[in-house]
Length: 316
Image (cartoon, rainbow, N blue to C red):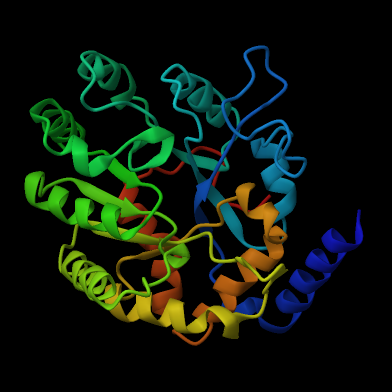
């Protein structure tokens, strides 16, 4: 174990020793990624030159990293635009009960979207798809296509969820328009903590107004994920550095709409899993037991409608 990993584990152990009883006992991490660069076909992400990420990210590796933190389940979110990787992700998730849901990848405007969705929708682990501005996509532009709206209506009719990635003012505006076009669709905004308010006042005001509008839509949820960041070559692991941004998100959306997500293993580029988790835990510590239970578990059930698995529910 290298020094960084040791310090992360030590910090986690210290926090658990002093405040673990105040934390929920059955936490769901709503945002992790699974992939295996060693498979024959390779992976579209992460790139080979990323020494931190370019190694298998598997459920058993995740179990080891989260041992002792009270995490009993995770939602695996696609990190591949290849449609056939939906099956790979579902098969990988099915082998370990710590994965309670899968957010896959499909193109809602594609001619075969309905058929692909039909094959996936009845699999208990399949909880929805992700669409935004990853993989050269443009949610706002797609909203003008009737086939795209029809596809998302099918997703909604199936009781499934749409995750969006990655937030910027243009994407947030598109998500707001989408809630008007398909009002019944549950939507999850990923990584909102990474979106800094723009410097230009008009753009900043428009963003805040759009977020306030989205906060009025009960079918919209937000992940407190990808919180850590590097500024001037330094990654801050103290809560005070992030508190103002987290407060703004909390005050906008409230305790019934926010969820915990680690963004593992992408988060390894900024800190250990313990460091990521403890920022969230420390922030929630002052919110009360009810808010903690919602943030760390109950809101994920409302957003994804994931189901308990045999063998799940007890920490590894």
